[in-house]
Length: 297
Length: 237
Ligand SMILES: Nc1ncnc2c1ncn2[C@@H]1O[C@H](COP(=O)(O)OP(=O)(O)OP(=O)(O)O)[C@@H](O)[C@H]1O
Ligand SMILES: [Mg+2]
Image (cartoon, helix red, strand yellow):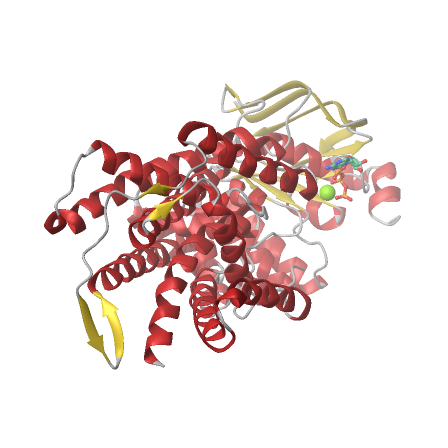
């Protein structure tokens, strides 16, 4: 039982990290960025390349090295996200939603098959695996590496939430999300705020990519596809555009999969995500914590 | 010297020619009314000045500087601030956060606090509601918040788009009093209004625009007495 909870929370924290970028970008420009999962994939490959360049890794150094790789990767995917926005989305900001959506799907393919061309179609084996010492916590087997990864995810999420709710920049992000023209009239540079949002969201996805690589041990160019859809589901469960809601949605989706596969078998895993997605989109599209938008007079 | 000088301004929205060679000026510390029917181009004029829409021709000079086509965020920093039609307060942010956003471009945080305190003193209803969400305020309170938020940016020329819209007569009078007070403290005002009577009470001068050009201009007293204005905008006095 506790094992199922822990497994769910562990996977859910990945989902939450990826979902946050989805949700922030949706919140600020009402764009479903289908290429977001591919930035997670790009993060996994960037981490792979950096680790490869660092040469052999001793097991004792694995964790500090992984943190360094994490930071470098977050910077890289963050900039990739900014570039994506600049090249693909900025000109379409006033365009019909469908044009944006099609562009996003196109960007997703470009990233996937671009990576396939660059790194090949075969899965790569991650050059670092964290040591597997395990502890017993309330009857659940928990490895130190899982604890470390969840710890990093929690730090990133708490940091993001503080940034958005407490800082001047975060206030500007919320203002742009609510009304970009009114925000511009307050002296906020809307383009810059949107670029920063892409940076943050993409950096978090990149971090999740490295963590997934180090945890599962294998990466390939399509790995972002499914997690992108699941992150979208997590965002919808919690309330897309809402940051605490999205974190909650990620954790809930992780738990649901963990318990669902335990009762019904592993082949059902992905059915849950999409079943819940359809359920929420029809019954409660604003999600659990979706903002009730107050009418403007 | 004039604070704002608009000359030969043209704006197109696709095929719609919304402004046609519009010209007007606002002097330092002056209050100027901009009157006209629905669709005359009043909002478009303010939006062109504040950088929300890009003119297709003409010049906008503020403080001796050509600002035609500049970014809104840059224009605000020059002290030229637009309070848009329909208030546009940030609905799910608190009153206080809305005001803090007015100080976004101001580096000196102590100065932002001073300005917000001054807004609370000028508009005490906002002070009582500082933690309330902007979208849950009444229409009049939202208008006050929109004006207060603009004051925190530190304007020297305030562009106001129909601040009286949808408000009860008593509230209109209160909003107009606030605008008069702001103007009396030295901030120039360009006031767009359908409510010509209220606007001409606080303005020094006025313009009437039709189909994107000025058709009439004069002192507020002249316009009040003008038969055409009286008929079209004052409901025939
Ligand atoms: N975004 C837009 N796209 C197309 N046409 C527009 C747009 N905004 C304004 N227009 C047109 O430009 C003209 C001027 O509009 P504007 O909003 O400036 O009028 P206004 O004087 O502010 O009217 P009101 O008193 O109703 O607010 C109108 O014919 C309007 O239909
Ligand atoms: Mg208008």
